[in-house]
Length: 87
Image (cartoon, rainbow, N blue to C red; front, side, top):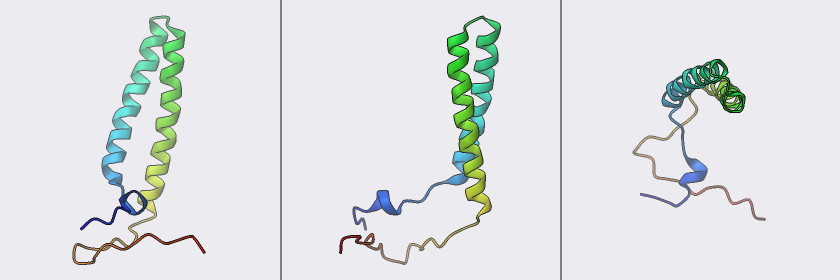
């Protein structure tokens, strides 16, 4: 049963994000080194910026994994409405 509030109450597959970030990190490092060796500074800079973004994302993902599981209702619990912040 869907409530329409899924973007507010969605959960993330952290292990999948971790492995995809590691894959992206490897390619960003490879791209940075390859473009430096082929004397393409702007592409190397773009890959370097991507390298930094992926590294920050990896730290955030590992932080969330280390925080441990939070309450996630099972399939027998009906969906709930998001909190109404209007007063």
